[in-house]
Amino acid sequence: MNQTSLVGPSAGAIDVARIVSELAALRKRSQTSRYGGGRLPDLPSRVAVLELVESLVSVLYPRHFGPYELTPDATDIFIARTLDRALRMLREQIRRELELFASDVERSGVDGRAEEITHDFARALPEARALLDTDIRAAFAGDPAAKSLDEVVFCYPGVAAIIRHRLAHQLYLLGAPMIARIVAEIAHAETGIDIHPGATIDEGFFIDHGTGVVIGETTVIGKRVRLYQAVTLGAKRFDVDENGALEKGKPRHPVIEDDVVIYAGATVLGRITIGRGSSIGGNVWLTHSVPPGSNITQAKARIDVFDHGAGI
Image 1 (cartoon, rainbow, N blue to C red):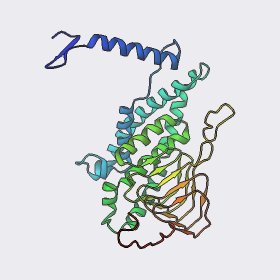
Image 2: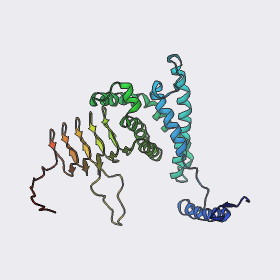
Image 3: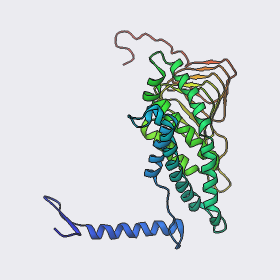
Image 4: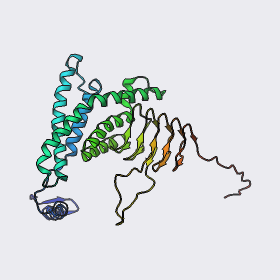
C-alpha cells in the first residue's frame, strides 16, 4: 500500500490523491466566492471556544466543575489562573471574528477592539454569577424532585443551558455574535435546549427537563419565568425587503412577562406579549397576546360515542 491509496478487502484501491485534489478544488472555489483572491482569514475555532467555555464555567462554579482535588485554600488561585488563560483564548477568538468581518479601514483596530470586548466581558462575570444563582434557586424551588442546590448545579440540563446562555448573551451584546453563537450551539448539543444568544432573559429563570426547548433571538423573558420541555418561543413569519431578502434583526419573537409558566409542548409565536402571572397549558398553539393573569389551555375535546363498529 502506498501513501496515496487505501486497499480494502472488497472496495479495491481508493485513489486518495484524486479525492484530496478534488476537495482542494472545491475548497478553493468556496473560499474565492467568500473572500475573493486575497489572504485567507483565520477562522474562530469551535474546539478553542469549547475549551474556554468549560474553563469559564469552572471559574463561575469551581467547587462543582473545577478539579476534583481542589481545596478551599487553593480556589482563588485556581480561578485566577484559569480565568487568565480562558480570557487570552477568548481574546484571540474574538480577534478572529472581528477580522473576518472587518473592512480594510477597520482591520487596523481589530486587536484593540478584541481587547476591549474581552475586558468588558471579564468585568461582567460577577454579575453573571449573581444572575445564575437566582436561576439555580428557582430550579430548586420549582422542582419537588430536587434534593439540593448542588444537585441542581450538577445535574439539571436547564441550568447547564442557562449558565452558557448568560456567557453567550454577554458576548452577543458586546459585539462578538459569532463566538456567542458557537457557545450557544455547544450548549444546544450538550443539553437539547436551543437558546439564541440574543434572547434577553431576566433573573430566576428555570427550564424543567428541557429537551426540545427553542428560544428565538429577539425573545424577551421577564423575572421568575418557568418553561417545560418542548416549548417553542418562535417567530410567526419572516418579513422580507423589496428584493425578497429576509429582514434580519427585527423583533419577531414573544415577550414573556414576569411570573409566567409555560407547560410542555406549548408553541408561542410572533411578537406577542404573554402577560404577567399567566399560565400557558401544554401543547397550546398561541399567536396572539394575552393579558396578565391569563390561563390558556387547549380547547376541550368533544366526546363522541361510537357503537357497533361505527367510526371505523
